[in-house]
Image (cartoon, protein in one colour):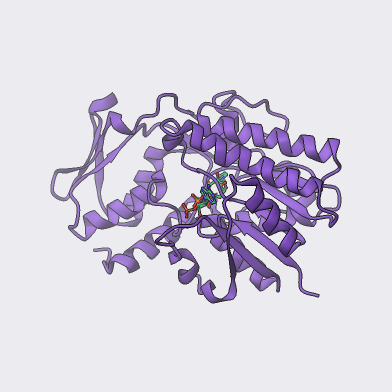
Length: 342
Ligand code: NAP
């Protein structure tokens, strides 16, 4: 019999890639979305899977909605990817963030506690839970020190998943995923913003990019490889939490430099602090300026993973490095905008 999986947040970056991955593995894939007058089915269409998914209208902050849906479908696996996922916005919407990212998870755990079928549950934890605790490589034993309402909401749900696994024997686990990007990344996220807006400059649709702290360091991987790790975690008989990342970290400035190199835009950085900017050497015009508006009330300066548990137990390692990721994102954007590198 075909396995059934429910993915919450199917319209998001990871939801779309995971759906494609599970369909290939011959799963019946159910995807939940929150009701909206204008559904964003773009990602599912881009991956050519829109017609292969059974869509379910589910609001994760409503216990009745979660409870009813799970007990009706009785899936084998649930991947809870739905979240208010943008750190910056979580400072302006902390209550909404905690409601979605924490109460939402609790609604699933409470439902599973009273469901007879032994359903495997995956929770989308994040490197943002570690905040500024350390500049060293982070593994599953590194203490949490979240630096945003987003990080706090995810730490709380992380501990809830652990608690329900230990106290009620639920078949649940969390993947602590470091940043992962792709052509399908949301436009507010810095990698997509840089790639898209630099391509718009090439197309002469934009003059300048406004950006926040370019010295933050992140461990960036390629999203389709990360959804594979989620699936591997749920196939383990004895569930555990795993750090997933590349083990490498780069500044946002390095990401910009490498993207410009790929797009053949010759650049030069000048100035310091809020007055720092990046010139296009071809025409001496500013193409990137620092804008305080994009700074966070509290920033996370550096995140680097140590995914040795994943390597050993899941046999998972990243395959696409940062240059490969930039190439994928640029090629897709250039195609979308119908622009060529000169
Ligand atoms: P994403 O593209 O922002 O997708 C999140 C999805 O959640 C969206 O489809 C969104 O629906 C849905 N959602 C938000 N609030 C909801 C609600 N109240 N009820 C139902 N659905 C709701 O995020 P992603 O990059 O795919 O990330 C997937 C998960 O992994 C998230 O939980 C994120 O926090 C976590 N994570 C991501 C990364 C990363 O680098 N990408 C790293 C670590 C952890 P709409 O389409 O309607 O907005």
